[in-house]
Length: 262
Length: 263
Image 1 (cartoon, each protein chain N blue to C red):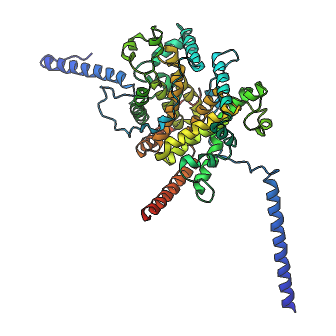
Image 2 (cartoon, one colour):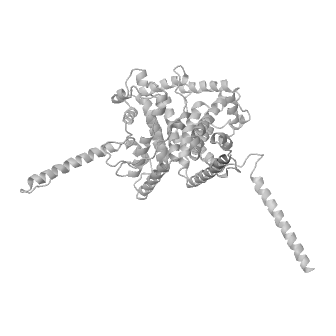
Image 3 (tube, rainbow over the protein chains, first blue to last red):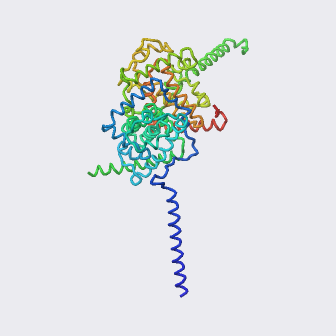
């Protein structure tokens, strides 16, 4: 009997422990996703200070400058492309937290948490640190975006509200695209032409979409290069880069092996 | 000066003269040496460099603006803005930057410590190799764009180099490529001063527009190429070895208090 009670007790304890676990898990979960939005991505060790883009980049073009005329001409070139294949690509490029998918084709490999966990993580983290090189300049110049200046629709309307109060200069997407292309061509130099072209065009997509002026994109690429350079000073990044390179070498060997068997 | 003993006067004077000649050559050599980017003749020991990046990545560059484009209007407006700086300190800096060799004086200031073959042999060697292995000629040969001073039949801020560059392509700007790439690499070595370093590299490119040697779009393209080249360098073990040595040398300088951390 006593023995049985002990067993019952332990069973109860296990149950309550399980319940606790579930509750704790729920609490953690409740903290993470907020109305379906993904967990906020983070960069590498914050001990390495981000590039102060404001101190490096020139100011955006003045309203009465020829440079701004060029911006407006490029906006119109973009408008003329909206209903083309390139315009649809620009629309597909709007999510700046999905860089793994954007670069998969150019990189020549599906970049997913399952197939390429190290490379996936490298991109996820680098993406944030590269963007931070554009942050201070964005805060300093509260430049109006093309679609707001013209009060016109973009290629992807759901983002219009989200970006209404986010400065146009420099383009964060372009910094991410160019900076990541620079990092990824280090991992897979054999495909660097395709990778860099993708990174370059990722910035152009913002002009086509009406979210950015050409000069935002140009400055974004400078910030992206500076951000990518700064990553190399971060030991955590260097370790992750090496892991991604090793993973890539392993997967390439595997892929080549398959080819020989065929 | 030394006093030579009577009996050995001739030999002694010869030795003194030889010593003087040697000192002079050393001084001249020192002046010539502060110019990475190309192997100066005075370089006594050859610096072995890593490989030149292949030109694959450069295929990303867009072509230079068409003559009837707004981008070319912007180029022309920037040329005129450059002209407006005539006689200013900024123009004098542009003329200094226009030399064939990268003058390390102003870059050293941004970097926080002198970059010379004597004081920072590793950092100097790294920059020397970057300057040597970074090249624009393959892309330049694709587009035979006329330089601003040739287009306008005008003069630059440094007329000495006009004839030599007259028949070379304007697009992209090689100086801008060197300036931006060296500053990207130096910002990796001294991250505490990265903004000043990058700003210097940026302005080094602008100097070309101010001088009348390049259109703004040449300079913009040069900066893209610089980032591409630096990325390619990072995939090269030879470069990484040199970079490691340069970083170690710099850490030593910091430890000895030889680096100005404040601007």
